[in-house]
Amino acid sequence: MKKRILLGAGASAALHKACDLASKLAQEGHEVKCVLTPRAAELVSPQLFEALTGEPAWVDEFGKSRRHGMDHIQLSQWTQVLCIAPASADLVSRLSLGLANDLLTTVALALAPGVPRVVCPAMNEHMLSSPPIVRHLQTLRKDGWRILEPGQGHLACGIEGPGRLSEPAEIAAFLLEVLG
Ligand SMILES: Cc1cc2nc3c(=O)[nH]c(=O)nc-3n(C[C@H](O)[C@H](O)[C@H](O)COP(=O)(O)O)c2cc1C
Image 1 (tube, rainbow, N blue to C red):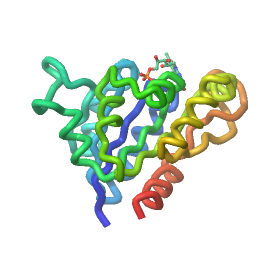
Image 2 (cartoon, rainbow, N blue to C red):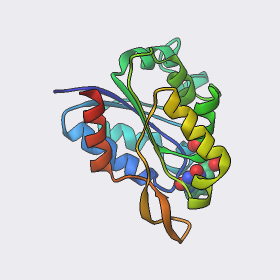
Image 3 (cartoon, helix red, strand yellow):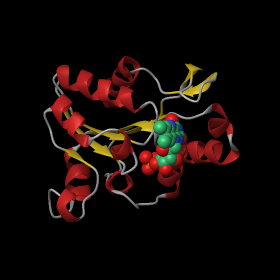
Image 4 (tube, rainbow, N blue to C red):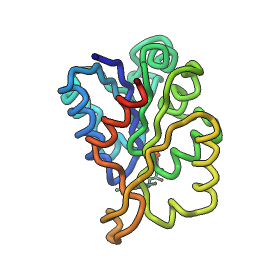
């Protein structure tokens, strides 16, 4: 059944998979809106996500970029699920601390309690096993986030190891399972 999916994306070398994921979900008939962090929007233009989904994409809610009076409220009330893929180390930390210093983290905080939320980390293996990130991922789990554990394989930093963003098909299947 058609779902309303909010896809958030952080600045990671795995951002190309977020494009594939957005495209795949849209092709499956879901309504997909995307919010990029400002850093992610430096790597890939939100325009590409708009083209792939046929929906607007957001970066921030101030100035010329805003679309509604309060985009964080409008988007948090619209979506049936929030999926953050890829989630950088910094984004995982901000979510865990409850920071709201960009549109994506503000939407995450504004979600109603029953709305499912999924985080798909992508980072270098040392970042992934660093004590702060291990701690922050544990906190997110306790706070009700579903974590799609990153896989093992080639990392953009040139090494093999854990930290690789899950494949778009796996993320899509996980999302539909979470949505029930
Ligand atoms: C090309 C490039 C790729 C990056 N890939 C990653 C990554 O996969 N994981 C990560 O945690 N940080 C990565 N970084 C560093 C983050 O982009 C940086 O920490 C940034 O502040 C994260 O911002 P955001 O999470 O708000 O998007 C990368 C940086 C660059 C320039």
